[in-house]
Image 1: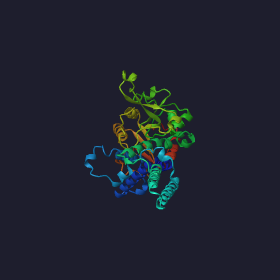
Image 2: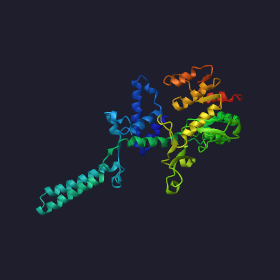
Image 3: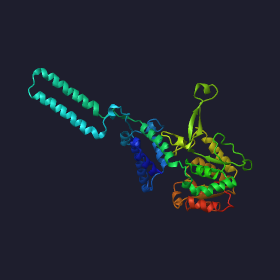
Image 4: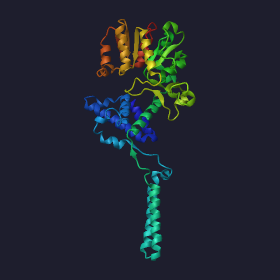
Length: 396
């Protein structure tokens, strides 16, 4: 996904400075990876990029700032804010600058020739005035605009916001054919009323569920209070632990009328596809490796719902999860240890076992071969293999 972000930033003419900041951070992480014995050609995780960007945005104010004598010299060169140019500075596009310079030079040359040719003394003042006017015109018309100023982290913060917005371009799926490999999973969940919990922000499962008329419920106002399986009726819990690109934050209790009865708080509301596509839209997601336990909105309640659903089952299927989120790992660990008859099926790519090396929890989990099964033939093949068996009723 990191390559896709670089491509999207490069295509957007309004994100030139942010694109440079993104490339700088990716390059720094690759250098660090290689310097520590890793393979720099294997790329970097986009959430690591976002976390590094957040840290650089707050490098002047975070807790470690008093102990850092100096940052990399390139940071101040990159973290520069260029004020929006006025109309005067946008009058001439870059292609016209040479023509402007030549016109000004010709005017100055003509004034100097008039001065040298022996004009009367009383005309000197007129010639000098003309030269001053030409110089003033030249400076006012083709200067470089307002003076740049240090960003002090603002450029990196703007880059974080732009990355969150670009998630919509990457994760908004409205065509069911793009996610058809998920159809067996959704059909299985709908038939056996199996909850689905995802760490992804995209709308792939949402789109397939709509196409299949599957009764998934994603009411983030009432999370944390899902009934027992026998009491659920027709609906199926569907939890997005880290948010969705089709959600956004809404600040409530701020205006005078609300303030009389409510404390200021943050809510999450669902939005339409059209709203999500609007420029500047900020989805309600937890992006990056930092602050995964956000107190804003319903995210803590979502995690509690995940814990409650785990307690109700003895079997778990994990698809495409890197085991890098400690708060999720902790609840899986407790569930696995408290119930000795629990089973886990992990579906991932061929390189899964090699990727386990830096993730101790994943290595520990897969060592329990009597209770944990690993399929390394990819998500599409793994889903087809698992959910083609109608007698398998594992939660996802």
